[in-house]
Length: 271
Image (cartoon, rainbow, N blue to C red; front, side, top):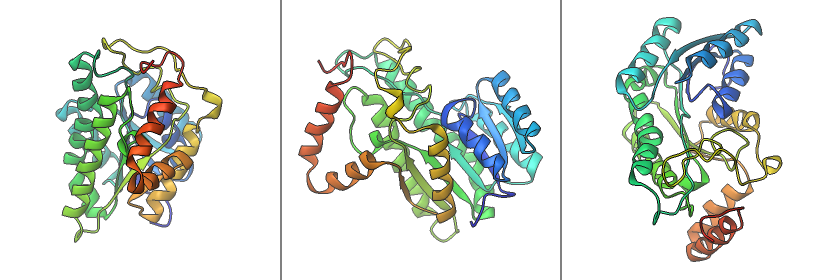
Protein backbone atom coordinates (compact mmCIF):
# COMPACT_ATOMS: atom_id res chain seq x y z
CA UNK A 1 0.00 0.00 0.00
CA UNK A 2 1.84 3.08 -1.26
CA UNK A 3 -0.69 5.60 0.00
CA UNK A 4 -3.91 5.87 1.98
CA UNK A 5 -5.56 7.87 -0.77
CA UNK A 6 -8.92 6.41 -1.83
CA UNK A 7 -8.66 3.67 0.80
CA UNK A 8 -11.62 2.98 3.06
CA UNK A 9 -10.51 2.96 6.69
CA UNK A 10 -12.78 1.96 9.57
CA UNK A 11 -11.68 3.39 12.93
CA UNK A 12 -13.20 2.48 16.29
CA UNK A 13 -12.88 4.75 19.28
CA UNK A 14 -12.92 7.62 16.79
CA UNK A 15 -14.65 10.30 18.86
CA UNK A 16 -11.53 11.50 20.68
CA UNK A 17 -7.81 11.02 21.24
CA UNK A 18 -5.85 8.77 18.89
CA UNK A 19 -8.99 7.71 17.01
CA UNK A 20 -10.02 11.29 16.27
CA UNK A 21 -6.48 12.17 15.21
CA UNK A 22 -6.36 9.20 12.83
CA UNK A 23 -9.69 10.22 11.32
CA UNK A 24 -8.50 13.76 10.64
CA UNK A 25 -5.01 12.84 9.43
CA UNK A 26 -6.12 10.02 7.15
CA UNK A 27 -9.00 11.99 5.66
CA UNK A 28 -6.55 14.79 4.92
CA UNK A 29 -4.41 12.21 3.10
CA UNK A 30 -7.34 11.31 0.87
CA UNK A 31 -8.71 8.27 2.68
CA UNK A 32 -12.42 7.57 3.12
CA UNK A 33 -12.80 7.28 6.89
CA UNK A 34 -15.62 5.48 8.68
CA UNK A 35 -15.88 6.49 12.32
CA UNK A 36 -17.23 4.34 15.11
CA UNK A 37 -17.71 5.20 18.81
CA UNK A 38 -20.48 5.47 21.38
CA UNK A 39 -20.71 9.28 21.28
CA UNK A 40 -23.00 9.87 18.28
CA UNK A 41 -23.07 13.64 18.73
CA UNK A 42 -19.28 13.90 18.66
CA UNK A 43 -19.03 11.57 15.64
CA UNK A 44 -21.53 13.66 13.68
CA UNK A 45 -19.61 16.83 14.52
CA UNK A 46 -16.25 15.31 13.55
CA UNK A 47 -17.67 13.96 10.28
CA UNK A 48 -19.07 17.40 9.43
CA UNK A 49 -15.68 18.99 10.12
CA UNK A 50 -13.93 16.47 7.83
CA UNK A 51 -16.48 17.16 5.09
CA UNK A 52 -15.96 20.90 5.51
CA UNK A 53 -12.22 20.37 5.03
CA UNK A 54 -12.86 18.51 1.77
CA UNK A 55 -12.54 14.96 3.12
CA UNK A 56 -14.76 11.91 2.87
CA UNK A 57 -16.23 10.47 6.06
CA UNK A 58 -19.18 8.57 7.47
CA UNK A 59 -20.06 7.57 11.01
CA UNK A 60 -21.99 4.98 12.98
CA UNK A 61 -22.60 4.94 16.72
CA UNK A 62 -21.26 1.67 18.07
CA UNK A 63 -20.51 0.00 21.37
CA UNK A 64 -17.79 -2.48 20.39
CA UNK A 65 -18.81 -4.87 23.16
CA UNK A 66 -22.05 -5.55 21.27
CA UNK A 67 -21.46 -7.78 18.21
CA UNK A 68 -24.61 -6.63 16.42
CA UNK A 69 -23.49 -3.01 16.61
CA UNK A 70 -20.05 -3.92 15.25
CA UNK A 71 -21.75 -5.64 12.32
CA UNK A 72 -23.82 -2.52 11.70
CA UNK A 73 -20.64 -0.41 11.58
CA UNK A 74 -19.02 -2.73 9.04
CA UNK A 75 -22.20 -3.00 6.95
CA UNK A 76 -22.50 0.77 6.85
CA UNK A 77 -18.88 1.13 5.68
CA UNK A 78 -19.42 -1.38 2.88
CA UNK A 79 -22.74 0.15 1.84
CA UNK A 80 -21.32 3.68 1.82
CA UNK A 81 -17.93 3.11 0.23
CA UNK A 82 -18.12 -0.33 -1.39
CA UNK A 83 -15.62 -2.21 0.75
CA UNK A 84 -12.98 -1.96 3.48
CA UNK A 85 -9.23 -1.60 3.03
CA UNK A 86 -8.16 -1.04 6.64
CA UNK A 87 -9.78 -1.82 9.99
CA UNK A 88 -8.20 -0.05 12.97
CA UNK A 89 -9.32 -1.45 16.31
CA UNK A 90 -8.60 1.53 18.51
CA UNK A 91 -11.50 1.59 21.00
CA UNK A 92 -10.14 0.98 24.46
CA UNK A 93 -10.16 1.85 28.15
CA UNK A 94 -7.47 1.72 30.81
CA UNK A 95 -7.31 1.22 34.57
CA UNK A 96 -5.12 2.07 37.56
CA UNK A 97 -5.35 -0.09 40.67
CA UNK A 98 -3.58 -3.00 42.33
CA UNK A 99 -5.08 -6.41 41.67
CA UNK A 100 -5.35 -6.92 45.45
CA UNK A 101 -7.96 -4.18 45.63
CA UNK A 102 -9.62 -4.02 42.21
CA UNK A 103 -13.18 -5.20 41.71
CA UNK A 104 -13.32 -8.06 39.23
CA UNK A 105 -15.98 -6.24 37.23
CA UNK A 106 -13.29 -3.72 36.23
CA UNK A 107 -11.15 -6.45 34.65
CA UNK A 108 -14.20 -7.88 32.87
CA UNK A 109 -14.95 -4.42 31.47
CA UNK A 110 -11.37 -4.02 30.20
CA UNK A 111 -11.52 -7.39 28.46
CA UNK A 112 -14.95 -6.66 26.97
CA UNK A 113 -13.85 -3.39 25.37
CA UNK A 114 -10.18 -3.93 24.55
CA UNK A 115 -10.18 -7.61 23.59
CA UNK A 116 -13.73 -8.57 22.66
CA UNK A 117 -14.25 -5.23 20.91
CA UNK A 118 -11.35 -6.13 18.63
CA UNK A 119 -12.65 -9.66 18.07
CA UNK A 120 -16.18 -8.45 17.30
CA UNK A 121 -15.09 -5.91 14.69
CA UNK A 122 -12.60 -8.28 13.06
CA UNK A 123 -15.24 -10.99 12.74
CA UNK A 124 -17.46 -8.90 10.49
CA UNK A 125 -14.75 -6.90 8.68
CA UNK A 126 -12.50 -9.85 7.84
CA UNK A 127 -14.10 -10.96 4.54
CA UNK A 128 -13.92 -7.44 3.13
CA UNK A 129 -10.33 -6.81 4.25
CA UNK A 130 -9.33 -10.21 2.85
CA UNK A 131 -10.91 -9.27 -0.47
CA UNK A 132 -8.95 -6.00 -0.64
CA UNK A 133 -5.70 -7.61 0.63
CA UNK A 134 -5.82 -4.86 3.18
CA UNK A 135 -4.80 -4.33 6.80
CA UNK A 136 -6.14 -5.05 10.26
CA UNK A 137 -4.51 -2.93 12.96
CA UNK A 138 -4.82 -3.33 16.72
CA UNK A 139 -3.86 -0.32 18.82
CA UNK A 140 -2.13 -2.05 21.70
CA UNK A 141 0.40 -0.64 24.17
CA UNK A 142 3.76 -1.17 25.80
CA UNK A 143 1.57 -2.84 28.45
CA UNK A 144 0.88 -5.47 25.81
CA UNK A 145 4.61 -6.25 25.60
CA UNK A 146 5.33 -6.56 29.32
CA UNK A 147 3.12 -6.54 32.39
CA UNK A 148 2.48 -3.04 33.70
CA UNK A 149 2.03 -2.87 37.49
CA UNK A 150 -1.23 -1.27 38.56
CA UNK A 151 -2.76 -2.12 35.18
CA UNK A 152 -3.45 -5.87 35.37
CA UNK A 153 -6.67 -5.71 33.37
CA UNK A 154 -5.16 -3.37 30.79
CA UNK A 155 -2.07 -5.50 30.24
CA UNK A 156 -4.13 -8.69 30.12
CA UNK A 157 -6.52 -7.26 27.53
CA UNK A 158 -3.68 -5.98 25.33
CA UNK A 159 -1.82 -9.30 25.56
CA UNK A 160 -5.05 -11.04 24.54
CA UNK A 161 -5.45 -8.64 21.60
CA UNK A 162 -1.90 -9.38 20.47
CA UNK A 163 -2.36 -13.15 20.67
CA UNK A 164 -5.59 -12.96 18.72
CA UNK A 165 -4.17 -10.74 15.97
CA UNK A 166 -0.97 -12.76 15.61
CA UNK A 167 -3.02 -15.92 15.16
CA UNK A 168 -5.25 -14.13 12.65
CA UNK A 169 -2.12 -13.17 10.70
CA UNK A 170 -0.90 -16.78 10.59
CA UNK A 171 -4.28 -18.13 9.52
CA UNK A 172 -4.28 -15.67 6.62
CA UNK A 173 -0.69 -16.09 5.42
CA UNK A 174 -1.90 -17.28 2.01
CA UNK A 175 -4.61 -14.64 1.63
CA UNK A 176 -2.58 -11.45 1.43
CA UNK A 177 -3.93 -10.04 4.69
CA UNK A 178 -1.70 -7.63 6.60
CA UNK A 179 -2.04 -7.61 10.40
CA UNK A 180 -0.19 -5.08 12.56
CA UNK A 181 0.01 -4.60 16.32
CA UNK A 182 0.76 -0.95 17.09
CA UNK A 183 2.14 -0.03 20.51
CA UNK A 184 2.09 3.68 21.39
CA UNK A 185 3.77 4.78 24.57
CA UNK A 186 2.00 7.13 26.98
CA UNK A 187 -0.03 9.44 24.76
CA UNK A 188 -1.70 12.76 25.58
CA UNK A 189 -5.29 11.60 25.12
CA UNK A 190 -8.33 11.27 27.34
CA UNK A 191 -7.92 7.49 27.81
CA UNK A 192 -6.05 8.13 31.07
CA UNK A 193 -8.69 10.55 32.37
CA UNK A 194 -11.32 7.87 31.78
CA UNK A 195 -9.17 5.10 33.27
CA UNK A 196 -11.04 2.99 35.80
CA UNK A 197 -10.04 2.84 39.43
CA UNK A 198 -10.39 -0.09 41.84
CA UNK A 199 -14.15 0.35 42.24
CA UNK A 200 -14.85 1.02 38.55
CA UNK A 201 -15.16 4.80 38.81
CA UNK A 202 -13.23 7.00 36.39
CA UNK A 203 -9.82 8.31 37.44
CA UNK A 204 -10.73 11.84 36.33
CA UNK A 205 -7.16 13.12 36.06
CA UNK A 206 -3.85 11.79 34.85
CA UNK A 207 -0.89 11.31 37.21
CA UNK A 208 1.61 11.82 34.35
CA UNK A 209 3.06 14.94 32.71
CA UNK A 210 1.15 15.50 29.47
CA UNK A 211 3.94 17.67 28.02
CA UNK A 212 6.32 14.70 27.90
CA UNK A 213 3.92 12.40 26.03
CA UNK A 214 3.39 11.65 22.36
CA UNK A 215 0.56 13.53 20.72
CA UNK A 216 -2.34 11.63 19.10
CA UNK A 217 -1.35 13.14 15.74
CA UNK A 218 2.16 11.69 16.06
CA UNK A 219 0.69 8.26 16.78
CA UNK A 220 -1.68 8.56 13.80
CA UNK A 221 1.18 9.32 11.39
CA UNK A 222 3.36 6.48 12.71
CA UNK A 223 0.47 4.03 12.37
CA UNK A 224 -0.10 5.20 8.79
CA UNK A 225 3.55 4.60 7.98
CA UNK A 226 3.32 1.13 9.50
CA UNK A 227 0.27 0.34 7.37
CA UNK A 228 1.99 1.50 4.20
CA UNK A 229 5.07 -0.61 5.02
CA UNK A 230 2.92 -3.55 6.16
CA UNK A 231 4.79 -3.89 9.44
CA UNK A 232 3.96 -6.65 11.92
CA UNK A 233 4.83 -4.71 15.08
CA UNK A 234 4.85 -0.92 15.27
CA UNK A 235 6.86 0.45 18.22
CA UNK A 236 6.75 4.21 18.50
CA UNK A 237 9.24 5.55 21.01
CA UNK A 238 12.37 4.61 22.93
CA UNK A 239 10.52 3.03 25.88
CA UNK A 240 8.64 0.63 23.62
CA UNK A 241 11.68 -0.37 21.61
CA UNK A 242 13.74 -0.79 24.79
CA UNK A 243 11.02 -2.91 26.41
CA UNK A 244 10.85 -5.19 23.37
CA UNK A 245 14.66 -5.59 23.31
CA UNK A 246 15.42 -5.89 27.04
CA UNK A 247 12.65 -8.44 27.64
CA UNK A 248 14.48 -10.92 25.40
CA UNK A 249 17.66 -10.82 27.47
CA UNK A 250 16.91 -9.46 30.96
CA UNK A 251 13.21 -9.90 31.84
CA UNK A 252 13.81 -9.80 35.62
CA UNK A 253 15.63 -6.48 35.27
CA UNK A 254 12.69 -5.18 33.24
CA UNK A 255 10.31 -6.21 36.03
CA UNK A 256 12.27 -4.11 38.50
CA UNK A 257 12.47 -1.15 36.14
CA UNK A 258 8.72 -1.18 35.49
CA UNK A 259 8.03 -1.38 39.22
CA UNK A 260 10.39 1.53 39.92
CA UNK A 261 9.00 3.74 37.16
CA UNK A 262 5.35 3.15 38.04
CA UNK A 263 6.00 3.59 41.77
CA UNK A 264 7.25 7.12 41.03
CA UNK A 265 3.86 8.23 39.71
CA UNK A 266 1.95 10.67 41.94
CA UNK A 267 -0.43 8.70 44.18
CA UNK A 268 0.92 5.45 42.78
CA UNK A 269 -0.96 2.37 44.04
CA UNK A 270 2.43 0.69 44.45
CA UNK A 271 3.35 2.93 47.39
